[in-house]
Image (cartoon, rainbow, N blue to C red):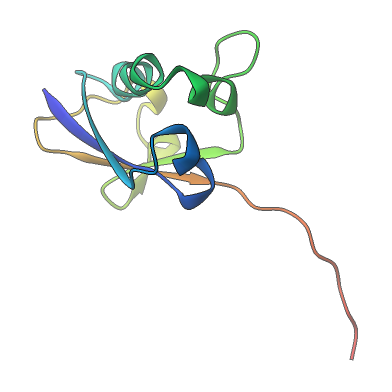
Amino acid sequence: MAITIQIPTALREFTDRQSEVRVEGATVSEAIASLACAYPDIRRHLFDDGGKLRSFINLYLGDTNIRNMNGVDTPVSDGDAIMMIPAIAGGGFQGI
């Protein structure tokens, strides 16, 4: 099944500057693994040393965070789009 993964700006340098990548897979896990296989340099940014998806990477299937579904085991259908959103931290209270 052909799935589109939308790549955030911060990770596009690892996908030849593409904002979207078409991959194959029957689940979110398979689609993300296919992305990492096609673009090996992105792997370390997505997965920890144990091969698990890093906790700060949020994946949405449509408008729903996969954590509210079946996680990486969420099935995908031909033509689905997965949006990848890394959590952003930093800054501080500036006061008034």
